[in-house]
Length: 245
Image 1 (cartoon, rainbow, N blue to C red):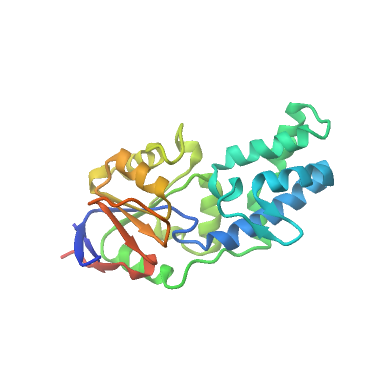
Image 2: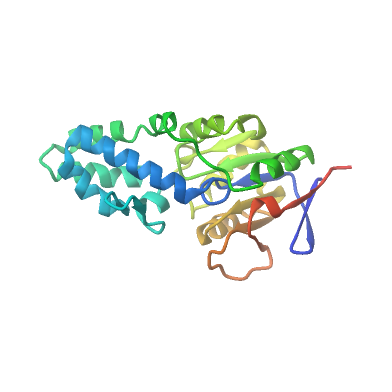
């Protein structure tokens, strides 16, 4: 099996499974753009009052164009965030079914990509290609919709690198439950015992350990608990793959 060198150790596995936002993609830039897009979409469809109710609930300040990275837009599954939008619209006098339909329309995130290009962290694209070349199968498991993720990968010209994308519609429960990781492993036909999950939050450790992954690599500086199978790097660009012999 191919290997990577990390923290002075070699890890041997087959499936390199990645979280998306905050791990590969500059999440603060993306979520700020996404929040601005959704604010405008809710305002256009349901009025300024609904947008103003939704913004602080989601963790967005439209006046300053600032996103709270610990808030619902950045941290919850898309369907939970969309429920907040529907509730905000409902509070302006719409029926619940009408409010939900308006929210679903406003959350057509694919339209965001027409005016926004996501940004990978520096060096990530080059290292993903090295990992692929070394013999790893690459996949993504994200709390967002897989359709939106595929559109984002297409915008980044990275679609061919990833054999598997698992999104919120593929699992009954999103992270920190193990369901998404297990769904991705099932799609890839590779067991969790031969999988390393790369994430950026404590919930990624919880999900990967519950799925019984070989190891989990945390990218960035989130506060995490110590564990023999948990490793940390500043960036995916730091991982050194070893070509399969």
